[in-house]
Amino acid sequence: MKNIVKVDPHAPERRTIERAAEILRAGGLVAFPTETVYGLGALALNPHAVRKIFTAKDRPDWDPLIVHVHDLAMAHALMKRLLPQFELLVSRFWPGPLTLVVEKAPQVPDEVTARRATVALRMSWHPVAAALLEATVAPIAAPSANRFGRPSPTRAEHVAEDLGDRVDLILDAGPTPMGVESTVLDLTQSPPAILRPGGVSREQLEKVLGAVQLATGVADEVARAGLAGPGMTLKHYAPRAQVELVENREELLARADKLRHEGKRVGVLDTATTIERLAQTVFAQLRDLDAQGVDLILCVLPPPQGLGLAVRDRLLRAAGKGTPT
Ligand code: AMP
Ligand code: MG
Image (tube, rainbow, N blue to C red; front, side, top):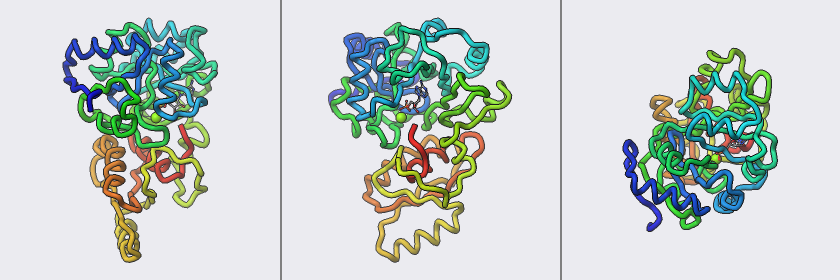
């Protein structure tokens, strides 16, 4: 496709970054890699450009966007006041997959925050994301670059598949290093609340902050994960095929056998690997199995520790047992 351009993930070519920055400055949309997944970027302080993100993704207007910053001064300019907890977390985890929700400064447009009084801030360590922010010298609003409700994109091809020519340019730096999204931590609650588990674990946060809560309705359920628990109607990170979760390998094999006997085409998600590798590949696996046209995807849930909490959360949502984020 003509709007995809390759870029070196370690040393992004200056001309390519400049071209992308030019599109952003003109109010356009650029998809770019972060350490977690591909983001769909627009200049955060340009409401017209930000609205294009919602249209391109078919994202409902109540769902606020994450704002990427280049440096701390840029973050401070978007916040109402400085918080000791914010400074502490930033010194420990930025740049990295941690998004912090704080009270917003008046200059942050309602389009970005879905009219909330808070804004979600993040600083990615991916060299392409960092170079792009350095070139624009302005905050970039960037949610994941997928259609709303679809698995997040960890490769440029996923972005092209979902968004096609709804995006002006896709910077293709190959597969993203982490594969699951950033942890979203709300610092306006006490103790701070994880709204979405992600690349920085609850355990890592608790070492720095002391107690951290898992927001109700979101991650609690994930941690306890009654598989037979109440199925929520809203699906997210979902492939087209139905996803069915089981607790162990034996159960999976028995279930696969039974379904195949019934004439169903069954896909099995490969979870017999390290949690880091599973995080990297989980969304691509869901998309690939879908592309193979299976009726059903079977999967063993990982335990809810470390990165496992985030992967588990995404799998539960893919199975329609989570709440949307
Ligand atoms: P995405 O970038 O598409 O993975 O989604 C952004 C995530 O950040 C969503 O889960 C949003 O609900 C969350 N988020 C963004 N801004 C805020 C905010 N001001 N308050 C709470 N959550 C937010
Ligand atoms: Mg998303």
